[in-house]
Amino acid sequence: MATLLRVLIVDDSEDDTSLIIRKLSSGGYDPKWERIDTHEAMKSALERQEWDIILCDYKMPNFSAPAALKLAQEKNIDIPFIIVSGAIGEDTAVAAMKSGAHDYLMKDKLAKLVVAVEREIREAKIRREKKKTEEMLEMSRENFRHSLDDSPLGVRIVTAAGELIYANQEILNIYGYDSFEELKNTPQKERYTPESYAEYEIRKGKRKRGENVSSNYEISIIRKDGKIRNLEVFRKQVLWNGEIQFQALYNDITKRKQAEKNLRDSEERYRIVVENAHESIIITDEMKVVFANTAAAENTGYSIEKLTSGEFTKVIHPDDIPMVSDYHTRRLKGEEVPSVYSFRIICQDGTVKWAELNATLIQWEKKPATLNFLKDITERKLLDEERSEGYKRTKETLDATVNSIAMIVETRDPYTTGHQLRVSHLARDIATEMNLTIDQKEFIATAAIIHDIGKLSIPSEILSKPTKLTELEFELIKTHSQSGYNILKDIKFPWPVATVILQHHERMNGSGYPQKLKGKDILLESRIVAVADVVEAISSHRPYRPTLGINFALDEISRNRGTLYDEKVVDACLRLFRNKKYTLS
Image (tube, rainbow, N blue to C red; front, side):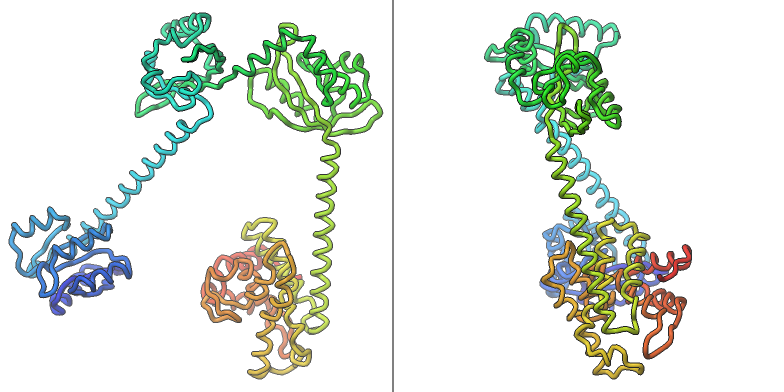
């Protein structure tokens, strides 16, 4: 099969052009070509469409190869440009190649034309792919660099020897330095507190000896202004500019450390605050409750003594115990878990309440413990449930309203009773076969069950006429799509139902009505309803004819697949009937 080749020929000779086209055709190409011989004509051709190759004579009465080459380059389009000339000196040809021409041939030696075209098209493809790859690589690098530069955590990249090769803005903010060079040139010892520097030397020694060093640790640093900050560090090996280096992420935990110190130093004052808090506050050692404030006792109905005499899990709903225990254990191990989550508690009187927990690790009597803040969110949960029920009731009301509308339509056209319902079922099942979302399936089913609502505007004697409709009567029937749209357009459905009803008689090639839309201009949902409508209508009885049968209907959509009906929709419908033994119901 000949390969399509879009050729722009810049030449003033029709005979030479014909010869070139014959050579290309005999070489396995199907040339779609245009001949031009002026600057304006070439400019127009380049703007009008894409070309695979430009074949240009060197000198013409009103144009030249250098001028044509310059014009192509100004357009910044990578199109192979081959000079095909009757008389061109070697020096001239070399100059043209240096200016950007890809090759040159003599008109009396066109035997090499096809080979040259194939080569230049192949090389142009390689250039485009290389350019695309380079652009994607550069974009990836930029994205990675921006993710580091804009990170809320401090980021440093160092060599195995400890040489600093990258630091983001947050690192400079943490240390208080004005530039990367200032940070790099400040000795390590001056940036650490004495205690942290000693720990740094120990870690450094272990790494040199190949011993295991934790990748997560804490340090205390001295800022440029002399202030001390506490940092949490996460260190790992990374590939940086093709070499193995080490990345350290710094999280400023000064406030957290200060809070922990204040907690240890002023436990009594803390207790006063806790006892007067409105939120429930519980401290757990492992899962044993070691402290509960007054609000915790009031909110659960248990006494403080009762709460602190057993496991925290005794007030948690049995179904939620595994989740709470898992989060608690993983938090103590230093793993990342949600800091805020909700679960149910069972009060002393058996009442079930919803609580939102916010937890943090602390030191309690010199041992790790968890400080838990619990907020009663029962009312919020009940409101959420009411909203959910409200949505459910609204949905049921909408469905009932839509079904009532469908029944009203069928009273006008009793001979097609059940048509809209069967179309709705089939349309939804086609959508399911196409793996559409639940929302899309609801949308399609709703639109399909009232897709003929516009027939309320059609005289019933026409709808039930037992003989073939006249041309005038058929034109009147065709107004039902627009009428249906007019009836529904101001109703606030969750989806554009009125638009689907307007479009359900549109066809992929533009032969439908009322707007003669084509292809993707027709909503996918409309295309699905269209196929379901056709299949059901053909396979069902009508006043003017007996049923034609499901096979006839499937032949109709198969025959017009891609012409009248969407290919994917037709394929899904055919799979239902032919592979899954689907029946209309």
